[in-house]
Length: 312
Image 1 (cartoon, rainbow, N blue to C red):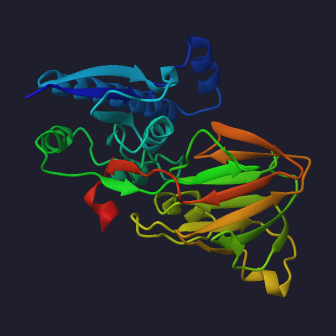
Image 2: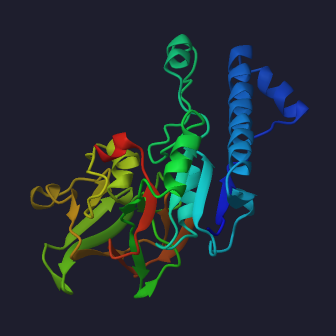
């Protein structure tokens, strides 16, 4: 049997210089500094643990820090990300639908720690909603994948076109269309289309932007903004106008809704400048007055090995 080829994508650990640490300590309690140091140690231990496990298996793997990855991922049988959801999201921007990905949450939240420090600071660690493994079950999950005992789920992604030109990456979680300054009011309109024809009224907006999420992203910023959680394998997109200013009675009900798999959203941008942010703030594309953005779930999916609770 041919040896499997794996890419091990690693989140780098933030390391403060001595001068930074000294400056930080003047305004931060020793407990917080110890918490940050401990998080870095836990993450690095997880990286070493995963590499030790992989070295015992019939696989060839290449470890790469995510900051050093810029080209599309090809010629591997599996991508393993070690970090949190952010590392898996970054990998997804360079992957097509032919390669599955397994996320390892290297630094999961510890309930007892959150409770202990609740009066001092937020000790929440990584949620890892899309990560099927931690160091506690990594070897078991990996063996099940290598032996073909488990199969990945196919998650929807968002396709974005600007003036009929496709953007080079897809969103696994969500997109935000907004002015680069979050305090600036943006002007835009949108409508839902089916088979190229409008199937909803045209909605004119003044707001802080427009967010559109996949089912996987509905548990993130969309939920925090007042949206609802969707079954993770659902192919609908959920949209929400952020902080709309004085919507008319007729438009109020259209500030939040769904775009079905056979539909698309067409938005026209009427502000001097703006950006389309994809899965957070690190990947973005500029837009300008008069640009037309088409958004749909007609993008190649992504194969992800999911934890059981995400599928329930």
